[in-house]
Image (cartoon, rainbow, N blue to C red; front, side):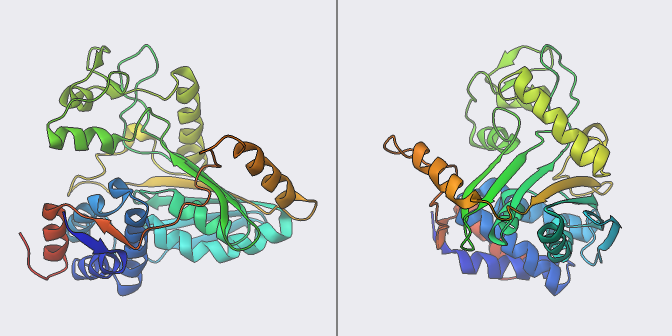
Length: 328
């Protein structure tokens, strides 16, 4: 398995996206997001999605020329119409205004709608935290989760991310996780590898636990912690779709399908400026308490992105091919 420099992954990803219909600016922003995920070992939200991005640019399922429109209906509220384009450039366009408002008012909501899947929410919340605000982000997805005790899909994996600034331009805490026991990509990757999944990840079409990834993909995933994760998943659905303005998960088509309607998802973010009053001292104290046991730390604390990533041969060939440099 070749070891590829993250810079090269970013460069080739940008070339691939631009050659399939994205503007150079949008391609560059999306390539940064892909490289961000790969540098953190999150292939599910990195190169794993590049082929579908390119396919959907060609078919028009995602608009690679979209010019996001920012509405500012109230002093601490921003609503961004992504124009059926990618979420990352729409967010990037609105972030400076949202940060300025957060510094003035203390707390701001930033909602994206008519957006493509945002893959790694941590990419967004980290940007908020590095700019000096606490960042909370949520999004919904295509339906894959049934209510506890049920078997009919209602919501998506509906991830949530939270990032905390360290007061020095960095991040003292960051987590990014689905509200299901695992991310959907873990099951699709198990299927591709011909491997079973652990019991507790999913149920089949009859609502029975399964270790077969095919049966899991035909059935439903399981909310993390049962009713507890289900409640958080519904909270995400309400914030991202009902408040944010995106489709409900039941209306969202499979995210990686080359053709079809635009994703039309919503992403919802809350930015909180800590202000004065000893916030950073208390967070540092908390981090110290967490670290009292050897090997323990705040989520994401001290985690450094890698300069290179191992890329499977087939995926490396696909990346080069998409970028117009040959390959399988």
